[in-house]
View 1 (spheres, rainbow, N blue to C red):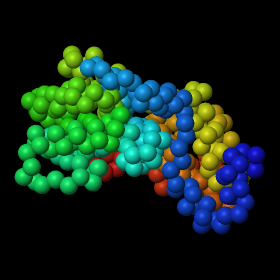
View 2: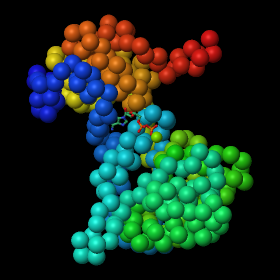
View 3: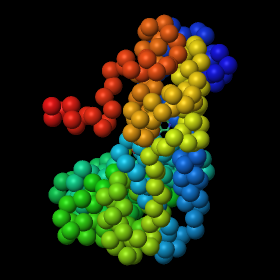
Length: 294
Ligand SMILES: Nc1ncnc2c1ncn2[C@@H]1O[C@H](COP(=O)(O)OP(=O)(O)O)[C@@H](O)[C@H]1O
Ligand SMILES: [Mg+2]
């Protein structure tokens, strides 16, 4: 089983089929080149000296193409801890999800909830904001991550403007870098504001193409999938097939590989091949709407 990573190999040797099927469903982090580059930028943010002009990052990409996975990885690498000298809780990275609609109160609530800081529904926006600010100072938070930022940048131009101002205010006032992630909608909204456009460095997570990077990704997946035989996922026929089905989205690639490996275990084939992929119960993203309408 030379095709497997050592840990996976050891697992495959002793695990039952059921255990291997569960393992197929587990998220497996792969540090592909783009993701690593973005993580490096984020790491630099942690030590950036305070100034009135902090750098901010806008991670832009289609849905299901790995934005949240990168943010979560960064968050995991910098979890909260207790400072031994002061016995105080330090939380270097705080990650929240923007509320589903542009509502300033709910936006601050998302932060307060994450910090287990209770709030009263009657509490005024200003008071919530001040508490958010003080909590972040208290916890020595160095980076604030806001995922799904497009939610709050949607809506009428007036609401959009309000939220662009909230973000500007946060960035100026807290003097910590903001890392936001969202779809193209967020990118366009931020570009519409000159000041924010200057402050937010956009980083695009492109869809996957048939190139060396994709082959590297598939090779990494192969090392982690608990199958006894080598599939040789980097074979051109397989690459083309997986790419076409997935529409270039890493989330779809992961799903296709998950379903195929499960089937490979169930059928005793122990490797992924083209005909197996044809048999999985999977609807490509391009066909989903169509199937729903039909
Ligand atoms: N670095 C990665 N390594 C392995 N799988 C990944 C990685 N990034 C994303 N995925 C797969 O893609 C799916 C969607 O990723 P996600 O980060 O939620 O996308 P987005 O936030 O852009 O919508 C994940 O559930 C996972 O299966
Ligand atoms: Mg996401």
